[in-house]
Length: 140
Image (cartoon, rainbow, N blue to C red; front, side, top):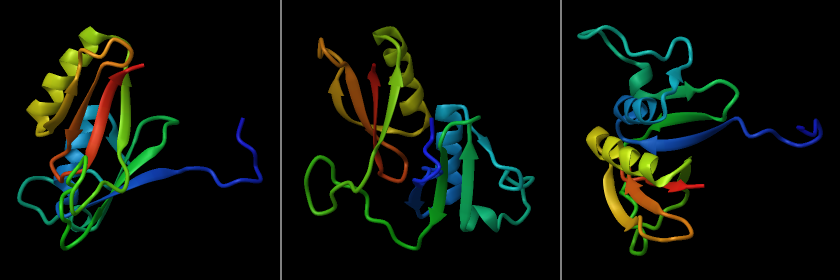
């Protein structure tokens, strides 16, 4: 139950140098939909929202938004000059699904950063999305 006296988390916002491409990556990976008005225009038409701000929604879940920036050095997870400032944790019910989602994520453009599939307590993969943001998919 949401306490009416505290802020409510509305969305997570990811900076990117290509808002449309990163939004498309997460739209396909997570099965989300654009909020009305943020859909991609027909091929060949101008895409002003795609160069500024886009939001994906999925029912009552927290939204994911994408904010266009001019420059964004990719995170150097797990250490280095540009540490991650935030990452997304995504869960699946079992190892078989985790294996399928690893293949889907890489087919969509994610890069595998760490393979901990054989961990008996918490099998997981850490990826970088196409803009370099780390995210995890693990069995929960």
